Image 1 (cartoon, one colour):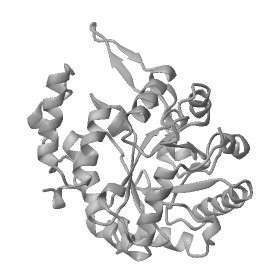
Image 2 (cartoon, rainbow, N blue to C red):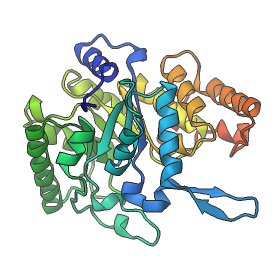
Image 3 (cartoon, rainbow, N blue to C red):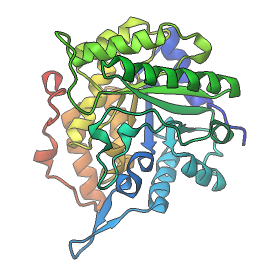
Image 4 (tube, one colour):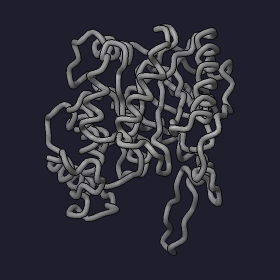
Length: 335
């Protein structure tokens, strides 16, 4: 297999950039790279009948990847390099529909394994993955940054990103850029955090030639105003996408994807929201229905619970609980 960006994804990116976007072109990625930050802890635990918890294994995680890819519902499968090698060995990518992507850096602010306290401190740039090996497996990778409004810290981050871009361009590796909010409060003066992050992103990319620019962004949803501002800034060159964050309620998931699309975002890259769902495939099917405006977010939650009941899945929350919007950033614009 020659690693490439498959036609399904490239066609959607082209239509988004040239202004012919339709809701059917909204890009959904399944982010299953959690072991890069959390180790075993990142994959979660399965409760047993006796109340104990058993860690989910790499085999469990990769089986979920294959199941989602076979559903035809996602455009990108984001994994670690080791998982990408395992999937390639299984010929999991051979249908040429879902574009494989790999995480290309793992700075210290994503290190969240048991007993770790790294997230209490600013990120130190770090890369485990070798670009040469990654490129053999995929033509698309994820690079992540965090801005702290700290001159020395942010210059270190930007220098590491510049070095990465140059190397990635040399070997023909495309990337998308993940921009985290800091894990702790930072001083942004009179500006809110969303405005600070938007300006930091645009400033970061303004001097980057098209050949080295990210294909799209993956960032935290900082509210409707911040999303609309960034999405409208330069849509031909900067496609905005949203990360999923904590699992939350099912209504939170549907509201996040609906509001992202409504205010100009064109990509959703969800990890825990998908993997920790009772029925991941049905959740993503309804995410697409919500984005394409076939169903509202409340009705989607009810449809999800109806499907769980028919399929024999035990819901984590009652339908009433799952209908609640619990993420404060989503509440002002919830339907």
